[in-house]
Image (tube, rainbow, N blue to C red; front, side, top):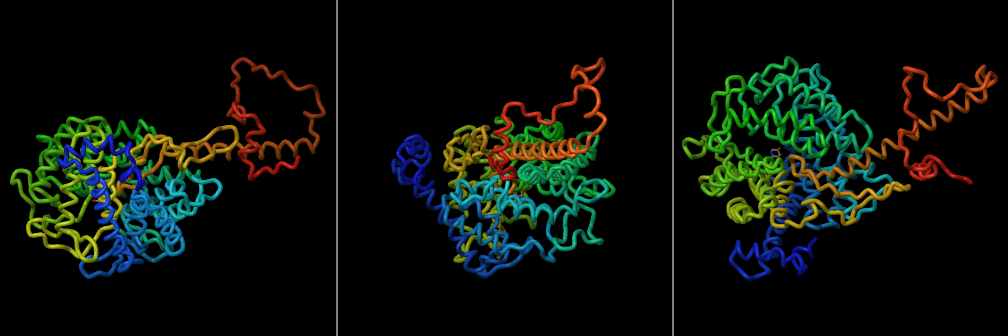
Amino acid sequence: INSSICSAGKYLKININKFMYLINTSDTGFKCSLMNRIKSMFYHAYNSYLDNAFPYDELRPLTCDGQDTWGSFSLTLIDALDTLLVLGNRTEFERVASLLQDTVDFDIDVNASVFETNIRVVGGLLSAHLLAGRAGMELESGWPCSGPLLRMAEDAARKLLPAFQTPTGMPYGTVNLLHGVSPTETPVTCTAGVGTFILEFATLSRLTGDATFENVARRALRALWKTRSDIGLVGNHIDIVSKKWVAQDAGIGAGVDSYFEYLVKGAIMLQDEELLNMFLEYDRAIQNYTRFDDWYLWVHMHKGTVSMPVFQSLEAFWPGLQSLLGNLDSAVRTFQNYYSVWRQFGGLPEFYSIPQGYTVDKREGYPLRPELIESAMYLFRATGDHTYLQLGLDALESIERIAKTPCGYASVKDLRDHQLDNRMESFFLAETIKYLYLLFDPTHFLHGGGTEGDGSWEEGGEGGQCVLGAGGFIFNTEAHPLDPAALYCCSRHTQDRRELRDILINLSQHDRQSKQPTKETEGPAPESIALKPGEKKTPPLLSCPVQPFSARLSILGQVFSDNT
Ligand code: DMJ
């Protein structure tokens, strides 16, 4: 990866012009130095976390120490793991993958956010598991349908399952990892906290063959869908037991954002029309009631009247999502609005009052969020327009200038005077830096379409190869890439195992029957196999017609030992 960025002539020839145009320089080393600056940014924060904060969840960049925030599972290290590979550091990726296996324990008496644990921990481990082949790690037989990081992800996700045991199927927001949901737990969950599971949970189910995870995520999504208002909108917080909307502001930002993101990405990853149709119906209402001059406001979910004419920095993922759906014109215009706010402040304030054109009281901070850079990455990929690279440069400069401390990068408390907070959220390494790097590296394997064998997985038998990465990657909402091809391969693998189980059951039943003589075996000749009128044909036990039985034996070699 390093060499493709900095020295491969073929690659530079394609991309130099874009950068000449952008930075007005003929120095081909500039691109290399830009990539290296992003890497330096990563390692400044990452090394500082390891030196001063590990095994705590987060680094405190002003006091140079650590703290537990979202749990007690070295969150920053889990969240940053796949970024190491994205930046090309295979050895550190491998070291940290095994360090985490040795040190992280989810059997702990900690109240954890179901949402955050899913997107950061389950998502981070799943993506690292899926990238382990590409990292050149030794893989256990059966990978990607099994492996130590997958087992860790499953372990973490199982701890979240008690939260879904509710009358509606919509989950509680918090769960104790040891004891389950507290009897005093509030039933009020934000919309994103109900609808942001399908990517990770379907991945888990399809890799492991245990449908439980996907089923609970789908049940929650369907329950939420039924609660939409007559005008087709959802609010911000819902009582997951009574299904009453507690906060009735409808919008695309905080509390809701990743619900919409997961309907779209879930539809793409799982080729699922039900999810896409849900999103499209929401989108009609969103465009109708909340969009004004390509800004998106907050409105009352039942009446459609404006409740908050505010832009929130979390909403900046939206143009990227629109570009995934092909709505480029609208995405570009909305991005321009948001980028104008970035230019005004050198970052995105958490809230921005659209009528006043200024920050909102107590919401002037910029905690180094990724969303605008994320959208820039998608839009640059879709359009090739250098505006998006310019945003990347602005972000790099701004973060270096405002947020860098001797010990890492600090959340900006107030964009007006650049006061800092003693916090570096794990998404800075998981998302912000990853998207920045990917923005400037359009040929990176994560941009999809790669069939270059690296990391491919031999399915075995006569079925041919299963090439990972062949269908591109879907990023979860914490920027952890998931590989749809792996889901497909492992679903087939599970199907094969089920078929084998059926064969074994059938054989053993047949064996028992043939040892106990019955009337049929002693009696008249068997009946004709022709169907009687009105009779339906039962499907054969083996419904996969192409492979000869000998090939099936070799696919399932662990189970049969061929002694002949
Ligand atoms: C991340 O944890 C995720 O992107 C989430 O969906 C929203 N907030 C942060 C980043 O801003």
